[in-house]
Length: 349
Image (cartoon, rainbow, N blue to C red; front, side, top):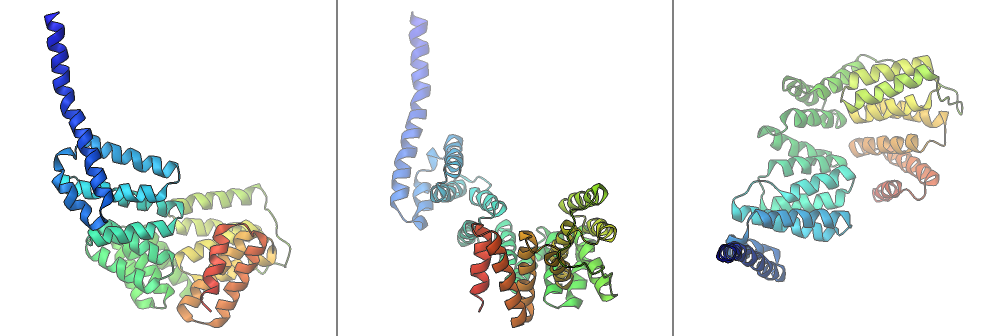
């Protein structure tokens, strides 16, 4: 009996600090959430003793719960709380950065932007956040700003090969060919296979390239098994960032079946991604001739005309971008992405 009492007393002694920590965490959170965010770190510093591993586990679980239940503001708030707590406790990592990448990959660029801005306010030298800022600027077609951001990040040796590749791509889009060649060559030296594809596309364009045969309007084909296999293989190559191999496969598909819609859309989208906007427009325009009911063809065509307008400020390109987006909207009136693109192009009048 005496041994049982001793064991019980020892368990209570061990449990008391845990209960005290939990109560302390609750009291700290009450104080934190009553204060403006700039005061959170100071408050947490006064409660440093309760910032243990259990606290950060709870923060992580709360963020996941908030995302799963679509409480985005709550996820944002606890990500900030977790990061400031990590600073106080001397722990590495960033909940906000992880959350920002999750939003970026899901296409929620507005929340990504808010998180990145918030990170750069509290931690302005965070290279991962600066790199993501460049990706957002590129996504929003803020090409000059994206180039500057990538240059800063590359200079500090974070994702250097990818930054140089993206800088080269932007330079070619902006008509800064000499700079683009230099950046692509530097990216290749740093191991970028994507930059080699971009440089090869530029050299091919300068030498005249290959012009595909003209299709007849409204005569799209779905392709035979061999052509479809080529297109599927090209998609795998694109996913692996092997753009040269993908282009070769898509060209072969078009040569085999000049009326194949999927091949025209795929190669047009590939050229858009590689920065060869004129070639992208050429193939995507053919795709819309082959099948005027292709949502993807109209969307990508709108993207291509819009990007060329952003560079050259030719109102004809703006009008063509708007017309393409409106065609896409007519085909998919409930598609939120199409509606965003229509609103964006209308704002450029």
